[in-house]
Image (cartoon, rainbow, N blue to C red):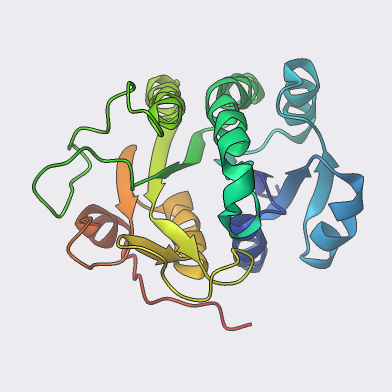
Length: 242
């Protein structure tokens, strides 16, 4: 039987680097996009496109029930290219909703479809002030934070839903992304991660590691990714060949 993965957010920055890795490993990848115009891109990557809105819970549930994936990978975000400052305020609100409501619909659909593992994208740059490098057990910023409070709420909701789901839930807390598709050629802040290395972490998590939360960021004294390194054999210096 063909091994199937549902990749939510297949046309995003990480999705575009991750999908070919999964296909090369023998997976049949069904990748979601909200736009029909992006279907040719997914086909070019060897991905079966599925046009669906994650906020349409019924459509998402029906789609996954038809696909019956072994694994579901959540790489959905709604942020502007290069984090365009003039668009970020509204984007943070949309992204928080995506992490909360979108994750709820995706988890429900994955469980209904009989998936055994869920890998979800989170972030590692909202830890509260404290000793560094930050460990996964360190507290996050308060939800009352004037700028990132809503983001923290969204992240907490996503991570709680993945942890409580009746399947193997793995949360990858990515650093700030740079590299192809992000709008940044080099790290823009401490605790960053190249998009290729971020994709590789998700690929490794498909078959390695136990349920839980893992920091995925470069070693610069800001965030400790020792757990991902030891559990997945992850390497922050890994890059796609193409």
